[in-house]
Length: 199
Image (cartoon, rainbow, N blue to C red):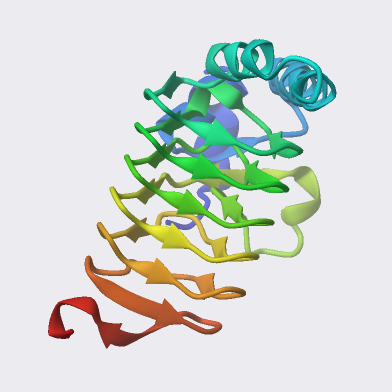
């Protein structure tokens, strides 16, 4: 979807409302966006500081920060979020240290997902026109990680990607397009190298 500058500039909605709708918005022009990300990042730091002293209290703060959190979710700090309420995590999912979600796109992580260290989930796409890019135009696309997925360490998932149930993404891979269920995908860009149903 290309940016129609005249239409985007005439849009009277808040930058947050445009972001949530998946439309073009200017992240540098929405004071509410800066407020949300600053508050979320501050809470992430508080959870990290609290984790060693009182794990239950840290988990309670984690639950309050996110959109939804299933039963039996476990995580290791530190982690970094832009908009905690846009992240949903299913039952028994494990999130390892140095996890980062970027941008305001909705992210849905299913049940029984294993997330390795230093995984990055990126939801924003910036405008390609170099003359418009300094104005901060971007839009977000959701990311869906289905049940039973394993993301190896340092995996990057790009905007709009769905990773199918039970699939494995090899360490260091960059996932630029959807991955079907029950496969192993590796590389940059990630490509399917094994069908897990084939044995």
